[in-house]
Structures are given as structure tokens and as C-alpha cells.
Length: 74
Picture 1: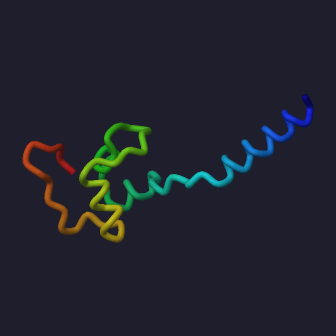
Picture 2 (picture 1 turned 90 degrees about the vertical axis):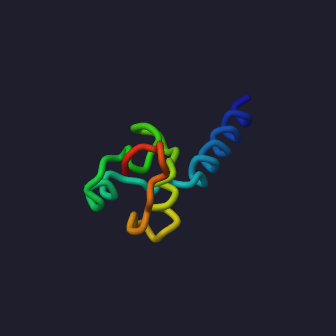
Picture 3 (picture 1 turned 90 degrees about the horizontal axis):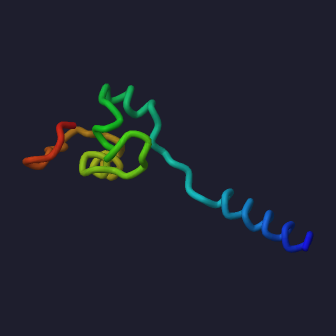
């Protein structure tokens, strides 16, 4: 039983160590002088909206981003 728990602990630690880290930080919001909700669907959630996806794929810049009609304001 102890061997199984040890093995499960090791596997769990390896899985946690190999998960990707979130790269969005409050520093991005300060840099852009925008709220977190400019790029995220909800506070504390990693899900990106259209502006966030644009920001991520355009070298972390919102320059040139055009919001789609009916969407929130970036």
C-alpha cells in the first residue's frame, strides 16, 4: 500500500511539474493600462476573449486590434 501511495505521489508531482504555466499577469494589464477583462472572459479565469487571443498572437500588443461589432470594449 505504501508503494502505491509513493508511486501516486511521484506521478502527481511529475504531472504538476509538467503543466504549462499561465503567462498572463497583472503586469500585462499595467503595461497596456487596461483591465484584465480586456483580454479575459472573466476575472481569475485563463480563458481569453477575442482581444486576448489577438494580444497573444500579435507579440503581446493590441495595436491594430479592431473589436467586432456587439463585443465588449477593449
